[in-house]
Image (cartoon, rainbow, N blue to C red):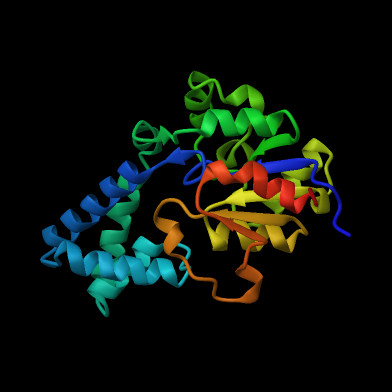
Length: 234
C-alpha cells in the first residue's frame, strides 16, 4: 500500500508559468543566427528538427536541432551554439516574458491547505520576485530554486536536497513537472511518485523508456488536486 502524500514538489516553467513567449524569442534568435551564418533554414524546417529532438527527450532540444541543421560543420555548430547560449543566458530579461497560468493561484492555495509545498525548478533566483508579486511564494515551504541551490535537475541530488530540507521521505512526496527527462525520471530514481502536466513545448516528449513514464498524466493544472487525491487513495 502506498504511503500517504505529505509533500508536493512543483516545477515552475510549464506547470505554473507559461513560458511560450520566452521559447518563441529563443527560436527567433536561433533562426536569425542561422541566417547570419549563411544557413537559410525556414521556420518550418527548424521547427520540424526541434520537434523531433523534443520527442526524443534530448536534454537540450534546440542544440540538437541546431546540429541537425548544420551537420557535419562542427565549427559552425560551436560558433552558433556559443552565440545562442549568450542570448538564452540573459535569464532575468527572459523571465519578464513569463506569465502565471490562469487558475494557478487557486490550485496552489488548495494544495497548500493540504500538503507541504516545495518549489522544484531550474530557474534564476529572480523568479522569487515574480512569485512574490503574484502572491504565490508564501504558499511554499521550500522557496529555493536551482540557482540558489547550486544544483539543478535532472540530477537526482536536486530532489534529495529538497526532501531532506523539508523532512519528508521520497515515498511520501510527489513531483509535478512538464518534462519526462528532467522531472519524471530523476524524481522516480529517488523514489517519488510523479505527475506530468501536458503543457508547453515539452508536451511533445515521448517516453524513451519505462523509467520515464509518470504515475499520472494530466492535461491541465486544474486536474492536479483530484489527481493527488487518487494517488493518496482517496
